[in-house]
Length: 279
Image (cartoon, rainbow, N blue to C red; front, side, top):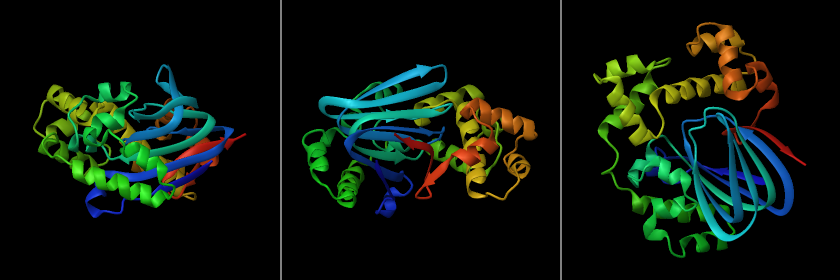
């Protein structure tokens, strides 16, 4: 399977979209990969694939199969443990990876409703629900595809749904390591129940899970990018109480110890951390 990650071209989109990913495989192959919890959301658009998601506790497993319907689109994210993907089909998939709360620049539709739909793209960008997706997949050049998507995304920005409080919350989280829900609420002069409602409506995830994922991703980046760094240093820098807490948290989230992840995980184009296999 060919995988290409493309950063946004337009400067206005850099705080909205982390990157685009295009997956292509013309032949039917058995491909499996595992990704890890993140604070971003993926809007995936498929051509002639069926997608089935199975959930066991906090673990999700997505199966991509050959399908008859021409175009489908799904929103995924808010994973609290590994997200495993199995592909047994030819595939042409375009993913838009949105920063936290960025979807509130386009719509006030609940995250729950978006995640249940197989027409998430059409729900978020209704003005382009006609033949746009067909024209998108007719274009074979990946970079031209991205320019087409950027054009409609820029034309769809609507600031009426995202609140200034949301921007303040995300800024505080970015500037402060090891935040707990109580300390975040205190910084905002907000009670925890109000903070909870803001997170669910604007970001789509409760604050405790979101903050845990923020800490996990920072620690994971350290594990994967700083190969000579001692795990103890990474643990303390990310406000784990001790190394046993660090290891326990990683095993709960990924099923692997930090050291096992360091050995198994690869990084695609310096952006996408995953465990990948093709049979």
